[in-house]
Amino acid sequence: MSTPAVSTPILGPAVSVVTGANSGIGRATAIHLAAQGHTVFGTVRSRSKAGKLEAMAADAGVNVQLVELDIADDDSVRAGFAEILGATDGVVDVLVNNAGVGGNAVAEECPTSTYLEVMNVNLCGGVRCLQQVLPGMRARRRGAIVNITSVTGRLAALAQTSYVASKWAFEGLSEGLAQEVAPFGVRVAIVEPGVTKSAIFAKNIDAPNQTGAYDAAYRRMFQFYAAGIAGATDPFEVAAVIHHAITTDEPKLRYAISWGADQIIAGRAAMSDEDWVALGAIEDDDDYYEAFRRGFGVDLRT
Image (tube, rainbow, N blue to C red; front, top):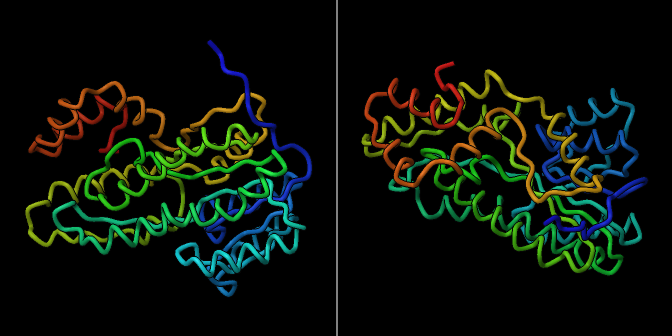
């Protein structure tokens, strides 16, 4: 039984806000939406570090209006969105919650402070922003919120417990949000990237391994990203999916995109919990990588 669409596609001129617009998926999305005729506000923590975004926008012949905003801070978000809403007569049609941070550590070695810091950005940051735009969207019965989670929001990637926890939480929030705002004609889309070309991977190199007991977990985590980076997807492909998600007449809740996403999400759904746990118990790396390939269709030895 098919369910009729409950939201209006965002077509024609629109006002869009993209958080974390300074790099990767955020930068590509801001430029891509501007190229589609949107008035785009890209949030950055520092205008002085947005030179590449400005240069790429100029090369594309578009304008992305920069707004300094730190999604980890209540006052900063309120001030940034006050600036945006003041410039648009209170209208924001699209919010792309993209800004986020990584976090490496196995559960035993990850301080609770790290969980709180990562959750504050990856979950609470998105909540802060959507709370600024939803009143207007509800009143106009028009709007779209796109939450960028991760393939790790569907699979518990090794040695990244704080990151995984934050993305699973953002998935759950988004799923509930979609029902909450459906009566008001507001669309929610969850975009789940696999490995996409982004500066975040160059920064995400921590391997605490304080006990020395988790060599295999850290090693396999880094091998996953090494394989992914070799085949990483251009972020503009993700931007195109985001544009499709807000404009299609047949919206979906979830969109998997980028290296490994479809295979990994489907593989985990088809795998029993018992087989998932058994995968972690494999001692030899080559045996682990072969089992991963069989289960997920992704060869980490590449």
